[in-house]
Image (cartoon, rainbow, N blue to C red; front, side):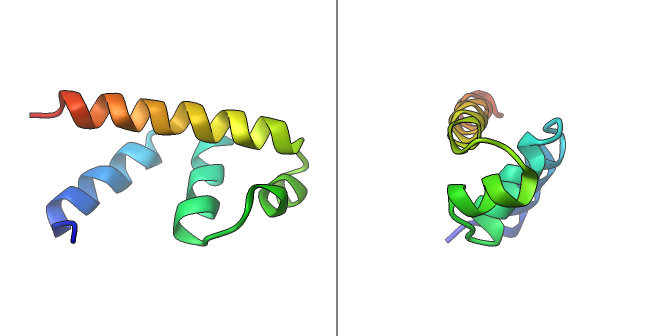
Length: 68
């Protein structure tokens, strides 16, 4: 279970991402869309979606390890 404070911080971090990374993260982790669904919705190649998800997760991991 994630605390409300941590959830808020995480959401703010995702909101700071540039587009289309922000939209991809929201669709994948909040809406549960699969990469091929995201690629169709955003007119991107599936490989691009996978790459952007990977980079965004790396960014979140770095942020998480360095916070407080």
